Every structure is written in C-alpha cells, then in structure tokens.
Image 1 (tube, helix red, strand yellow):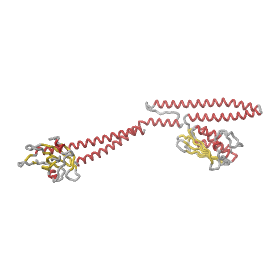
Image 2: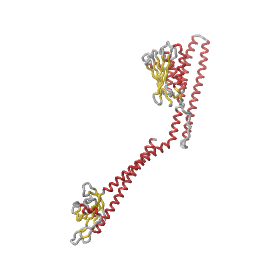
Image 3: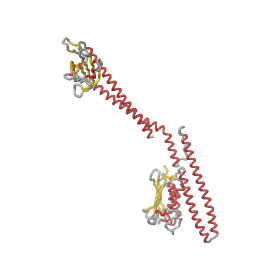
Image 4: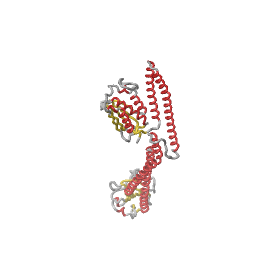
Length: 452
C-alpha cells in the first residue's frame, strides 16, 4: 500500500508543481506583453509627433500622460542619437527623467539598429536608485534628417512584478491545497481499493492462529479465485495432517501390540531371559512412545493453528499434582494472564507443562511455582521453579539428553525433560535450565503465542 500511495502521490505532486510553474510563466508573459503594448504605443506617438523646428532642432510632441511631467514619476521618454561607442546621447527627454538618461540595451545601439521602425524591448535601471524599468526603443529617420533618431519609452515595472508575486502566491496556495487533496484522495482510493486484500490477509491470519477454519468472506471477482485456492490449500494441509496422525496411530498400534505380547510371555515364564526381554521391551515401549509423541507434535505443528488457553491448563495440572502429592505437604502455585493462549493443541501443552511440573514436584522440598507471561506478540514464556536441590554444576546440558539420569536412585527413565525439549523445539520454541531463586531448578521455555 505504501508503495502505491508514494508513487501516486509523487506523480500527482510533480504534475501540480509543473502546472504551477507553467501558470506563473504564462501569467508573467501575458503581463509583460500587455505592459509592452503600452510602451509601444508611447513610442509610436513619439515617432509620429516628433518634428524639426525652424532652427532645425528636434521638437517632441506634447504628450497627454501627466506622469511624464513629474520628476522620477516612473513614466519616462527620451529621443536620442547613437554615439560612436554604441551608446545613446539624449536630444530631448521627458521632465520626469530630470537630469538622467535612459540606458541602452545590453547589446548596445546595434540591437535597435538591426530592426529600424520596430520596437525593441528590454529591462534596465531607472533614474532612481534601485528602480527597475521596462524600456521600448525604436530607430526611425525623420524627414530632412541625415541620421536616424532613437525613440525610447520606459515605465517602472514594479506593478507587474508585484502582480506576478501575488499571482504566484495565490497559485502556490491553491495548488498546495489541491496537492493535499490529491494525496488524501490517493490514500483513500488505495485504502478502499485494497480493502479486500486487507480483509483476506486478516482471514488468513485468523486461520493461521486458529480463530477460523477457512477463508469465508465474500470477495471481488479478482480475488475470489485466490480465496478459493487458499481454502483448498488449508483443506489439503488438514488432510495431510490427518493422514500423518492416522499413520502415527497405526504405527503405535502395530508396535505396541507385539511389545505387549512379549511382556506378557516374559511375565508368564520367569527367568533370566524373561528379565532381559522385559527390561528391553519396556525400553522399546518408552522409545516408541517418545518418538510417536514427537511425530504427533510435528504433525500438529504443520497443520492450521489451534488456540489453547494457558491458565486452565496450569490450573488442571496443579489440581492433579495436588492430588498425586497430597501427603507430602506440597505447595503448587501458578500464575497466567486470562488472555494468554498457546498456539497449539491442548494435549501438547499438557504434556510440556505436565512433565516439567511433575519433575519439579518429585524434586521439590516443599514449593513449586509455575508462571506464564507474554514476551512478544508471537511468543510467551513458561517458567517452572522448585525449591529442591537443583542440578549439579554443569548438569544442565546432560539433563536434556534423552535417557540421561543424573540421579540413578530416583525413579524414572530419564526421558521427561528430553521429551519436553523436543516437543518445545517441534513448536519452534526454546528451553533452558538454570538455578532457581528458590534454590532448586528453574526451567524456562519459550512457546508460540496465539493472538487474542
């Protein structure tokens, strides 16, 4: 969305800026042309009314513009002759010039001489300091004169400069408002136009986080095939997961039945061989349970997300462990926000938290503490601590190895924490062991969090 808005906004603003500059240039040209027409008319009147008096001197016509009679009024005229150095020498000038003369064009008198009878326009300095004037100059030859005269008319150009500034400010303000309106319209248009895509993204996120089973919204014709394909993909993934679960269940049944038969036969025929068969069969059963549990967790992790409230699971485990360890004066407490959800199946969370809390209850002196807290929008931390003896120094890594028992006198197979570690990893989380502030073991796990 940002790229579309940025591209459309840049293009719109560029068009607005170019349009504004073009309008200012056109207005400046039109204003200058209108100004030049007034100067050209004055020059034409000078040429038409100038003559030679009886003494052979140039006599200027009487002009009706009274500003030419006031000194430095901003309206000037002059009749001059060209000098040998390319400048002008005034013959007759308006009273408004007082003792000053108008300057020739930057190219000198040659520019005016190239176009006799045609006015040449240029900008120059006026008789007053800092005054800018617009000048019209024309070369013409009067009757009975051997050399041509140059007729000049000038006027202060500050009015057209002021009008140009005012016009530019008005255009800038109007186009700024127009540009802001266009950008706003682009944002609204893109937002409204892409709203079906945003809605589709929200529905896909809802499917991923377990809030919904499929994309069910009504979409435009362009997006309907995509929504159907997404639903087909979700259905296909669900079928794949179900097939994996079925295969896992079939494998569990196929392996457990022969193991049960072997254990039954070994129990019916006591002896050294039976003891070996029983021990190895039990080990095989534990290994089968471990790997089947891991395969089921991996299959669940590949499927669409499910939401499991963390608090009720911890409460259920606490009640169960309270009953199991009822005679040992165990204190099992837990804390979890009501709006915290595990992105996975309830059975997996029960197994993860249950194994760790049961292990803590076995080794605690009196107290076990479990706490769940969010650490980001996509993860939460589950911590279980006890006040038992904890692990020996350097035993953290050994405790997570499958089948490792750091205390051979205690009951168990050495698979509990290893199973938890592999289940946590199957869900893309991490698990670490450290010394608890209560003196025992601290087990900290990061797990995927479902959106609330």
